Length: 346
Image 1 (cartoon, rainbow, N blue to C red):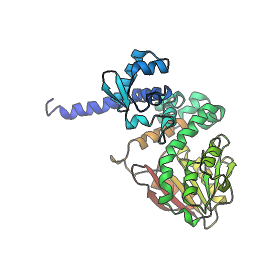
Image 2 (cartoon, one colour):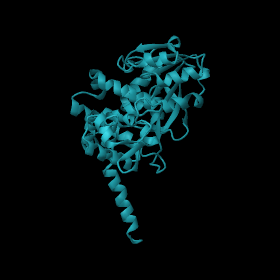
Image 3 (tube, one colour):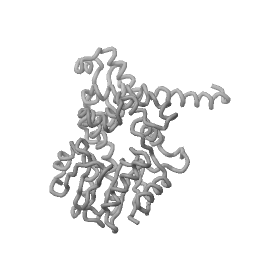
């Protein structure tokens, strides 16, 4: 390669890698569904052994394992003999840091079908999911319990690392009761309540969103300190808290819908209470040091639910329109992409 051709060849490599990205995603999704990491355990396994355990063809299994090794999820230590890497170990369903459900969710055909119509969403500004399935994403979840269970588990896994950081990044000790709006299985609220023994909690979500919450609270011994309230944040918010938290809720919806959600919170938050939004905050212009996944997440919000990721100015405008004043935006420590957006009633 001549010096003159190097920039072009490097650019070609970048674009080629991106173009193959969807195929890599499908390979990882297949590994999760076939439970490859679980079957491999901590030892060295062959493609023949794994194929026998999951009713697959040995040669095809070998090709999948090689692809996973090329992606850094497995290591081929000798011809045909594989072990799981630290990244691959996250695919184990029962691992303490498991991302198995997260991978299952984001490689599920249901989620990916709308992406086939990204160009339509770009033209119209509307979610493609609604046109493909004849209903919106959350309506589909309500009618498909198995898919909803995977979604809830995925959101719990996606929240786990953030939940470990939030209690030390924000002073919850100022409050008596925190309400987690759209809090799903309670992963975030449980972490906060464990860190602040004097704090009580309200976990608020749709009935299907709360389905796994009792198990989370029971596991952490928090049943007596947290009430479960079923409801729709488009019509109401629970009374009785002085801090209202919304994590990964606002990015699911368009501006008008977000204003409705925030106004329902404003009706119940006391004058000395607070609102805490936990979301990624985009810089005003694209920063090459910012993880590109946040912009892919923005497109995912567009095609599947009609929401978006937002800048600080966007959040300030939403808060102001719902009767809140934005007080501060505090990024969590890297590698987290989330920030704590604190607002007060006005």
